[in-house]
Length: 299
Ligand code: GLY
Image 1 (cartoon, rainbow, N blue to C red):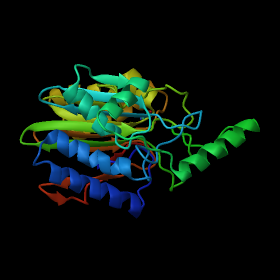
Image 2: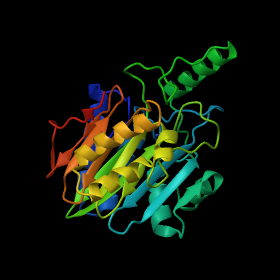
Image 3: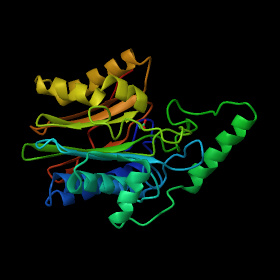
Image 4: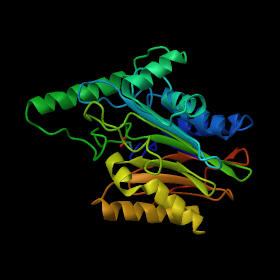
C-alpha cells in the first residue's frame, strides 16, 4: 500500500501516480521487501505532484531539504537521511545508509556528501509550482500577512496542492517493511527535521507490522505514533483499528493535529485512517490493484 500524504488531493492524476507506484512496488517484490518499498516511493519522489523528491515544499530560505527513511520489520534494520539536499531519490540514499554504513541516520551536509560518494548527481528539486508558492508566501510575509495555507504544509488548502509526506508499507510471506519520503513542512526553518526519518515517530516496522505516517511531523514525533500503532498490533489489534486509534490519540494529545497512517501486519492484514480532508492511497493485493479499499476518515 502507498499513500500520497495527508490533505493531498484524491484527483485522478494523483491516484494514477499512486497506482503506478504500488504496481512498481509489487513488481520489485521479487527482489525483496526493501526493493518493493524503495521502488514505490521512488515513483512518488519523481512526480511533481507530491511533497517528496522533485516537487518538495521549500523552506524559509527558498530551498528544498528532504527527509526519507526505510525499515525492514524482521531484522529491525533502519536507514534514514534528514535535511538532505539536491538528490533525486532520498529514499534510495536512506537505503544505502541502512545497507552500507554502520549508522542509521545521516543529516544535512553529511547526508548530501554521502549521496555524492554513492553516485547521486546534484539535482534541483524545486518545481516551478513550489517556487511560486514560496514567492507568494514570502510576499505576504513582507506585507505582514500570514500565508493562507493548510495547517501543516503552509500551502493553500485547495485541491490541487501537493501536501505531505509519501509512504509505502509492504507485506510478503509473513514479513513487512516500510519506506517514507518528504520535503517536510512549508517555510520550515533550515535544518528542521520532521517525523519521517525518526523510527517510531513517522515510520516503524517490526516482526508485527509496518506503519508509515503523514501529517504534522512535530506531533508524530512527540507522540511516537508509528510505534504506538506497532504496540497495538503486537497486542493482537487489527491494523485498521490500530490506525484509527492512533489518529484519535494523535488529535487528542496534540490539539487537533492532522495526519494519516497506513499499516500492514505480518499476517497481511492492512488498514489506513486519517483525519485530514483527503488521504489518497493505492493498494495492490495478490498482484492486483484493489480499488475498493478506502482509508477510514476519523472526524
Ligand atoms: N510529515 C512530514 C513532516 O512533518 O516533516
